[in-house]
Image 1 (cartoon, one colour):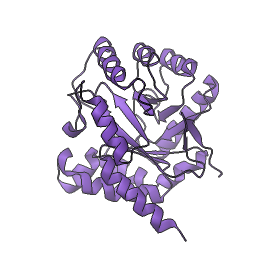
Image 2 (cartoon, rainbow, N blue to C red; image 1 turned 45 degrees about the vertical axis):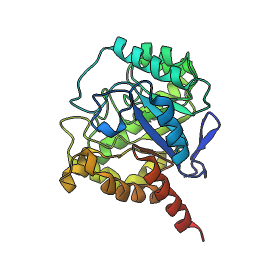
Image 3 (tube, rainbow, N blue to C red; image 1 turned 90 degrees about the horizontal axis):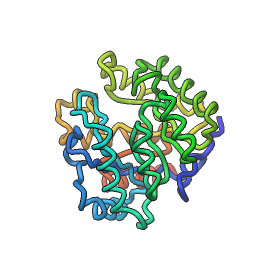
Image 4 (cartoon, one colour; image 1 turned 90 degrees about the vertical axis):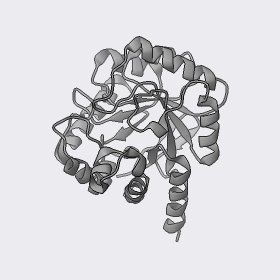
Length: 271
């Protein structure tokens, strides 16, 4: 199926564009991978370093979305994200914001942001309406009611069908699909994640760009017997396979290494 592109600010994702690299910056000390945490005051320099290393855009998160992470209030998330984005106003960086709360999105819209990263799949009507009203493109994850609550390949396809229908109903035309690889709910298993990865190419049948978001995740660590700090090699090996299967954008904690991977991939595919 012919793949449509998604415009995120001046950046074209999918539809024949080069594979894009999304760097991850977490302003949340609760994050499962400590190497992704950047405190307020260091955000600007971290973004410049990621851009210099090859990031096309930056995903900003102010609360950890990893299962079992320490919860924070919406007010705390608002305060954090406002401080982070204040550092970046006027820099020209292409930014997505990872949140599920309309109050946080409202603060984000007062700054220079270009996309929403919604792990809840627009399941909450109040938040979905806020996203639609923002006019921003969306990275939308396969979810029925809660983040990543689909299990297995068939369930993931059904969840993606659901979020595509939500986008159509809300009038959201610019979006990238995320098949929700990861241990989002207790019911999901590592084998569920490997099955999604082995069949990643099939998600292109929706005709939309697809996000590969596997950076340092649990199923990689469980296979290798490594904590998040030791999962880089496994992440890069899997990422190369997902890119070969058609991922349009890669979300990564490790920008320089992933940029090298994408450069090698591009070289190998040239005839």
